[in-house]
Length: 220
Image (cartoon, rainbow, N blue to C red; front, side, top):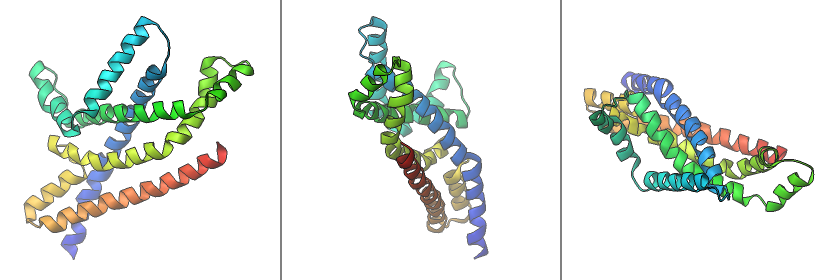
């Protein structure tokens, strides 16, 4: 029983020190990328520069969505040193996860923005707002409400996907579980405990998601 309880401590430590910070930083960075990409993709300007950036964004989304996250992580951590770019495991993981989240979330945000009725734009213009004010004060809040459930689920999925960082030696939750299992050979027990810790974290995040969605339903 003591071994069972003691096994939780390094896994919880790994979750607090690396899993949760890694997920939070990657998600924030990924959403920042997604916002920029989504805005570029919905821009209907005929400007050549805008058209070019839209092509770049489309290529970025295609290559990220068309390749496994694990492969992307390996390219950044193990591949980039071949061209003289060496990054530590934590930074490599943040870059890989951020780029991945950015590609998927950009499509979620783009669809959410387009889902807001065009009449909302006209309402903003009718009271003297320019495009920027109309977007930030009228369109964006409504789009965020639409996108919130999907973005929340994306973050929960990222918490679980962060276990892939173990392959580049980040001592997060699952890496700690691997170390423990290698020491005592109790693979079933240790990995089941790791699964339980992930499950508890996701239950808590699901609770926060429900509260957040309820709050925005009242105020938007």
